[in-house]
Image (cartoon, rainbow, N blue to C red; front, side):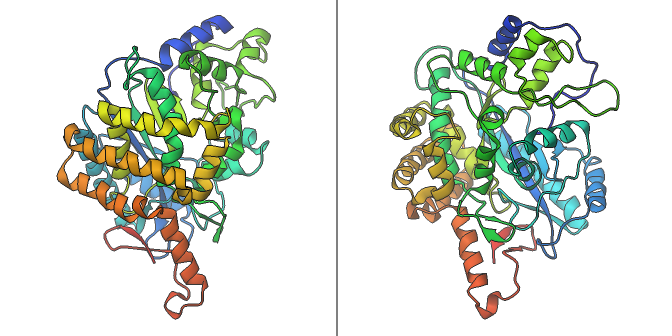
Length: 447
């Protein structure tokens, strides 16, 4: 959600509709042999002494000022509600990506621990209501635009966190690593990943009825801002149409004044109306950063649907499984054949506003078909990981996750619900305890 295009003087040459479409087609799908991998890990920041307590803006600002003095290989950004994000540079292997981000996380945790703070791996804050930490024109405009669809936008901005895995778009030609198949698989496998890694069943201290409340919030924002394009045989064309027809969130200014938040203005219409001013290529690039589909093509595929995971190394499991299923040819073939029948459950509707994604976010692996697909995909991933050079410890971690959750039709959200029920069933040992307790070394476990 952070703005990757901020900084630098904007290019003021006006762009036409045809030019905009050509730019989107050329930039967003860069095909070639899958070689690079990346991950973006978002975290809520909580008080070690009691995660239910809000962290003051002053403490967050001081902690982030200290973190900016720490040499990191990953890019460190702050989300609107004060969530912390580390974005890895493109890595040549799964091992390289894991090693680099793990080292950066160790450094970040050490600084936060000194301030009595900890990183919490939760897809949605179980206690806090939306409270914006960043006061910038981009987020002022985003809040105003999203408020038109209700409160979900503020929750998404301020109380959610995820694990986002970035894989190459794939080959130009057909086959298990072809870009068309990878695009389709990302949107069908994506529902399975939502169900497997759901970890946000509580909001404002109460269960919401959804195992991934974070995914529910994204769906509530609406298809124009947070939806995918309809799937067809031409991903480039579908994405270009989606971008051009999506509503413009804001029109930026060069001075310090508030940005305009137009209503019912698509980028396509903007290129013809050229009001409030003519759109430029820089405006187009920025417009793409204000769209939050579950799979975002940015020269690679950014899979954005997975909740943040519990524990210091919980994030490594969705990274490893996703990398194996996309970049190992045998595993990719198995995964595609496994999830292809799920397309019938979408009823031709785009993610996440379709029945398949709704069922995944609400029911997780209690859904028999999603559970069966997850079991096959995890088996394929575990078979592929050694071929990708994964260390034994990582393979064992993925296997342990499979045994604890997938094989039992559960997900991390079920652990949180068990803890919530124990707390509210009047058990003497649960009276007054927080939903989560923080391990002295920073590992979040159900209380």
